[in-house]
Length: 222
Picture: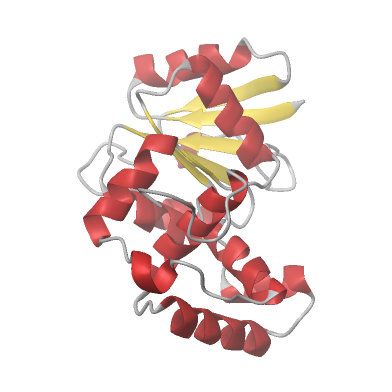
């Protein structure tokens, strides 16, 4: 049973999401709150939940990326927002969110996203990938079929899931310096420069991998 909390500053929205999720037999909604600071904590200071469903904009015009960065070390975060902005999606993922869906998501898709994030799998609403790719520019020529080693592929997968270089190193059983080297090689092979481009490449890689396609996809639109 997945223990889930929902944070949204709009009462109808947070209770609605809570009710949607509570209807799933394998999801236990243990808390709903207007902000992360209002979530109950156990005596040991932990949240005691598996997944936090978090609205990106809470009571103001700034995305709550600092809260994502602060909480992502202790709980898997699924962002659910009205925003489809590529900047918002990339910022949330870079700060540690494991998933991002919009508020157009139906109840079944929301539950599916919670399950994926609860299993520490990266989840991005399907329609968002094309929006992000169009916004920052697809680069099909250099990304068509780069030759990545298995370790580089593992590194890219962890980056797509929002892990830092140090967290990736721990999970792969190597040093952070080794991961830094893998990332440098990935940047060179994929012809990406800044962090946003690297994150986009990682998201596209995971999308293709989940669809069972070779890196770069096949056919038109790949």
